[in-house]
View 1 (cartoon, rainbow, N blue to C red):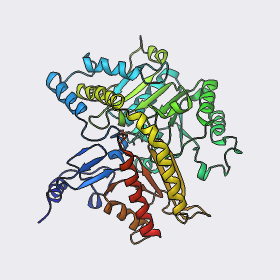
View 2: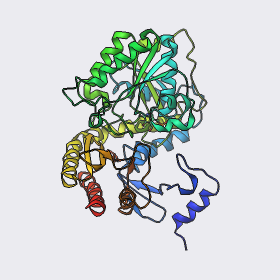
View 3: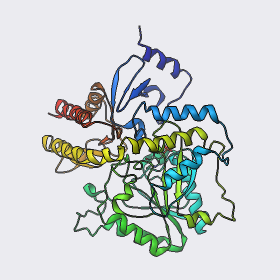
View 4: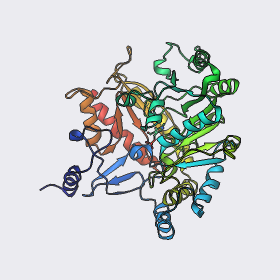
Length: 442
Ligand SMILES: Cc1ncc(COP(=O)(O)O)c(C=O)c1O
């Protein structure tokens, strides 16, 4: 007799396809409900969420303040024109303006992070009258065609040829510096390289530079302190719009509302999604400087889809933003950042044969596994899955066995629990990772 979860999965598999998976080997997330940092399946089996579903469930599971707000909104107004006026939309604008970098107080509401980037790209081209954009090599900006074209990572390959006009700059990946340098002697070449790219491509042909606040699931590269200020300087000097993609790192993931707040940099636009509603309803947003938004005062803003700024999503976002504040979740992420850092350092010291590097900012952490710490050859290669029977495959299976929902991708293990996690649960989850390393690699 199959469990309730297995029976349900078999029923669903008949008709519904999975995202980003070969359908026959897809490993679905078995979730029927949850509370805080934990969720459970239809048979009550509990899992510690070390990936916040897909890096979006920042406030954690079962937040009643948000589900009640959604229910109230659904009862009052569930369907409205995307250009409609209603209370939760107005309130959302006010809430966002209170937390975004100074001067970025106008918002365009869409459906997801990809669409936020899609719209930012279109707006940047319309505003500047230029068509090229610069994005980083190891980046992800979403799976719709424009956002995918901005994306540097291999998720772009299947959709090639992508849109014309995206040029690449290199990443602040200090452990594997693309220039073979070491910080601080490097002079932050990765930031300086942007100027070279701008000059080679023609400054007056480049509309925008898109950069993740801190790299997401391409490796969690935390830039050196000089990086973001230098990128800002270069964009200002050449009149190029700077777009910070905070879809992944926004809403407390790194211990501040937005990752760029760590460096006091004010971009021209910020794109957001994920933690904006923490996955309780679909929503994305572009924050713009008001003078940029004003360029659409007398000119039509040629952007929009039927379900944009949906009432239920707006209500979910307002309640989510209130939850961050009322429950002190951004502070909790900041407070637990050093706890996570200390444990990651200890993990590296205990497993010197396989842990090459660890890094984190707030509750966003990455463990980089290597075949040999001297050569730094990755345990699993770029864009590869662990080969069956290898230690990497056994390690992946162990993590699942231990009841962790966690992303082990290529040679990276990512740590991103909901921001409401307790110190005890954080340490418990990290101990599971530590045990899995010991059991497989000694
Ligand atoms: C940095 C970044 N930008 C954009 C996106 C796309 O967001 P969505 O999948 O919600 O459209 C993601 C998703 O992982 C992301 O990590």
